[in-house]
Amino acid sequence: MLELSRRRFLIGAGLGGLAMASPRLFAADTASGPEAFLTRPIPSTGEPVPAIGMGTWITFNVGADQYLIDQRTRVLEAFLERNGTVIDCSPMYGSSADVIGAGLDRLGAHDRIFAATKIWTSDGSETREQAATSERRWGIDRFDLLQVHNLLAWQEHLATLREMKSEGRVRYVGITTSHGRRHRELARIMETEPLDFVQLTYNVLDREAEERLLPLARERGIAVIVNRPFQGGSLFRRFQSEPLPPWAGEAGVGNWAEFFLKFILSHPAVTCAIPATTRVEHMQENMGAMYGRLPDTGQRRMMAEYVRKL
Amino acid sequence: MSGAVWLSYSLQDLVMFGPEVFLRLFVRINQALWPWLLLWPAAALLLPWLGRQNSEWPRRLAMALAGLAWIGCGYLFLVRYYGPINWPATGFGWVFVVQGLFLLMLKGKALPAPLAWPTVVAWWLVVLVLPWFAVLQAGEMRALALFGVAPGITVAASVLLFAGQPAPLRWLLLLLPLAWSLFSAATYWALGTFWLLAYPGAALVLSVLALRTNPRPARIPDLRSARPGRGHRSSGSPPG
Image (tube, rainbow over all chains, first blue to last red; front, top):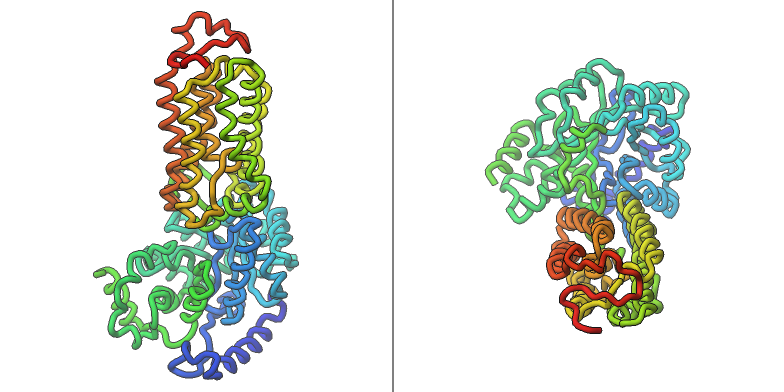
């Protein structure tokens, strides 16, 4: 969706910087003063993308409920206002694609996003058809990123997605997994197939990806989207009643959302994390992780240790 | 996707919507049906009274009302409202419609005898008490789960009719309530909407109780040859 995205991004970054400079608008959020938001380059092109995206699993599957569609549109609006662009979905997520489409229509924001979805069908010949259906539901002409969902019929889909990329029907291709499933098979695909993106589960408790997949992504120049950064919300349920560590501020962390997200973003292989939420205030907290400093290697270790002890 | 991959998902991973979205289904459908919604509780209270009559046509009407309730909640709640957020609900919805049509086709055959008082009382308790569990869960009156609108209560009440029927009809009719109860119980558990477990719980408990208190047709020799309208009674049924 992002034609001339680099230019648009630079304009956006400039406007974002100006907005951050306004103490009245952001007095509560930017105690440390004006600063740019965090972006990461997509290794295969160098195109920068904001480091926090938006997942839609569960949260945007609200059917035809107009009240909830309006509410989710406000969440989307908060995401875009805080310089988010990467939105990820899947045909597996029920009505989520329609709700995204309705929100983008309402906000007139189709050209402000990095649109990512997945191909989720065991029929390897349905790649184009499913992509076209998703485009229609989102109300866009083409996706920035199409990913094979959970390695399902990946050989067939990946071959078609590469054809679509060469035809200009999609800008990037990738493959996804979640919940730590099939990492060995994903590693084999990453070693042998040309990919722009992989998507996997990684968070302060689920760290298996650090062993093989994240180093491999760096080595092979593959962008990494991180799903389930809050472990489906369970990290909050387990830890948010606990105090942040006294050294949190030094690591650039002001709340638990930033704690979990900055832990992920401080891994050098990670391009973007895609937390999902149903609430505007939570979206604002999530997007806060794109600002301020990131934990260094020592602080990352302390974060993991702190959570483990809790 | 292979079976092994599906098995690697937890129950929570397979439920693709949140409790707020689900509970608002009750609110939305009640709002959409208002003020005609008031007809549903009236029909639900009338149904067992009709089913208790000696003459055939009220009992046929009772079965017709039950059939319409299944068609109503199958198509409206499950297909139209629930289906968009949960695909299996669409499939269940159409099977509910088929079961409703089946009940309509049965006419009086599925109620060969007037309902016993315990069944009538149990029915009234179900349609008067169970609606409030959705209210308790949602925290608002508009979420009232009504017979003929919401599947859980429709199923829980209907098993009282189905369990009293002669085999194999009773098993045929109880198949869907059992499947729905297991499916919905798993869903409510995954969503953490524990008050709603009252619906599948009631359906299962009432099925067992109704099966235990109703005799097997084999013990009533002339029931096997029962024709609609002959006024046979189930064991334990007082005169109508």
